[in-house]
Length: 339
Image 1 (cartoon, rainbow, N blue to C red):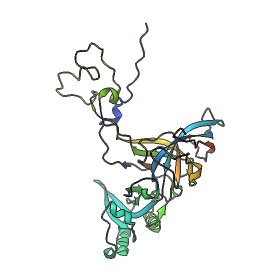
Image 2 (image 1 turned 180 degrees about the vertical axis):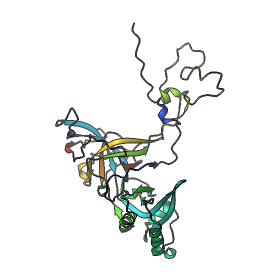
Image 3 (image 1 turned 45 degrees about the vertical axis):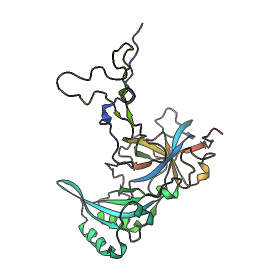
Image 4 (image 1 turned 30 degrees about the vertical axis):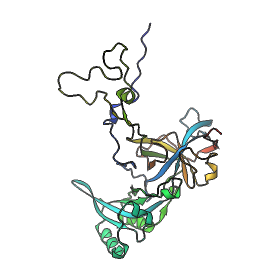
């Protein structure tokens, strides 16, 4: 008999250690990439609704299926407009970046009080703060928008918004950047104003939580023989005598899932606004009906339904990728309830 090929453990990559629960369910974007000379925000946010499949014409010339009709799975992310409620200015010194100042809109949404203690508008001197922020802008300044999500506009049962930061594309002219954000302060920004159809984005989200699991499910280790004396679904030897500790590389029980993950190079196949073209019969299971703007993302994304997805313009651009609007020939709207 030949030797059976051993496959790598399904969850065994050391790149994801430590496997502990994410600090925040909304995810955290640690890096941004300035993309062009155009002043615009570098990301957006939405809520995962579900999955379906489409057929489209492959338009990438480096693909062996170029010009052919393909059927692929897609994820639907509902993207209600984000409300720009504030401006945050960062400066940089030898110790790193620090917040230099903030400016909030003159009118704030009442739902925002469910999340934070909003400033008292009557006592807030908008013009004075604006002038002081303008005076401190320099070449090292980084401007980010403070956004409020609006989950009450879609099928979610909650009304409490999420507060997120999105960086503004830096064009080496902080005065123009500040004026751009100032022009949109207090207004709603839609996904089509920031993202481009057919382009590549990164999805930052918290994966589906699976609780406390053993090393077999957590790291994919092999089960021990039946005649093993005490244990079967565990590691028999957890390490040498010295060093006198258990190394982090040894598969051990613990938290599985609810980890922050970033998936790169996810293509936006469609930025839609007509919910009748995407809603399946009976709606999406455990989500409901799409009510407004939505994205079709090629492939899968982390997290369960209803979870907040942070969408960022990709920080690893592909030189061989041709950004163009794909030709979609079919979108499945079959009932997901098998009716």
